[in-house]
Length: 602
Image (cartoon, rainbow, N blue to C red; front, side):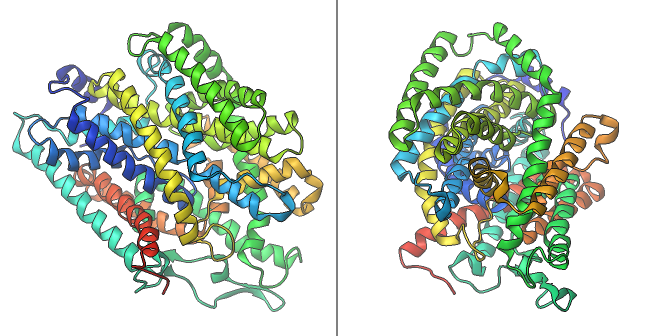
């Protein structure tokens, strides 16, 4: 059975590092896993619209590698260093969404947006911003993890995985067999997912089978007011990555996402055509330009409402700074590093993007309270409002620098990088606290992972966009978060009078619903039956085939948990992790193979 929090906390007192944490083997494995996670994460984010937690996936990769190179000395503490570096790299690579927003704005000729960082500039910018997130989050560990003991559920799940993969040396054979079997299951699922990706048409490699199923020429509506369902992307994708993501996310959230998809890609086109807002048989991009606004309104309004209703979190977080101890990483060192990184970041953003240094300084200062709010929200709800925080930063800078698109999206990218890094790493600190790891060693692992993630993103992002497409009806990377950021920037710079009135009214109605749902979610009695504003919004923005496939994965996991809870507790995370990792790794390798002339479109 899955270990309870109390059992995990007790485990921390029964074990302490014996072979060291920052060993040569653990650092080598950390570098390898950080490179894998940093390279594969952008594909997941741009395809799914959000980034699944990769701490567990990193832990399984760490187990596989350390079992080979550190067989006799392997333990959970070394593996925790590996998964921490992997999470740090992925948190940095999460900012592929900002690069995609740049791309979308450049494609809009009316925007006159020219920010186009080179891979070297991307590496330097995101390395500096993510390291700042690492440094700023370090003193928060004691307040959120030790004193407040916030759950951070994904961190607890990562700790459980580390414990399962390191059974007691003198424990029963069954415990050691579970760890070996879980690793083997993950390996088999990884190979299956990678093979399926390899033979799908959308890999642009072998292309032996289609990328999914669609209902063909099925049409909804009457003559003169109809659309082909397949043109809206309705169908099911042959993607084990989506299946694995659904298994981890769960049935409640994916069900609301599925409802959002039905509303966005079946009901909305029907109504838009019927009321002659769109022409007969519209393109998917035309529908997206309309449903983007209710999706954006609900997500931003719901996220901001949650922050406002939890204003006491901010007060408690600032109060906790007085108690932050330097026993793990000296506060003097943290303060000095934060100052140096802030200055360097201001210089880089002026040099690369033409952003005045004072604007960068304001963005950095704003990122601190936003980070604190995001950390408490994540710790209590397992939802990190990075998108809402970035949009809030956009709105603030729209008032500071009206009409300046670069001043609107670059600072939001800075705040987003700090928030993304701190949220992922606080989950790691939670896992480390449970198993008994040394925070200072984890901090060093985070420092190792951040630049590796930035380098991996800088190298893989252009290849992914070139191979799979980001803009247009045939683009395979939906990037809804980037679409939202770009659309919000255009709205703030051009004025709402440039948008269709119907889209604005829909956005206003969705915003009010977002406020209502976010308020209801705070009630434990109502939460179970309350629509998730984030899930509904993602359903409106993400491709139908991706969500439907995730929904299938959630159904599979629910049935598995209900019928065979013991085997699900042992192997479901391994299965989901393998499904996620296999497709993501092949997706990264595909453009490299194509560039070498070993593949091509079929």
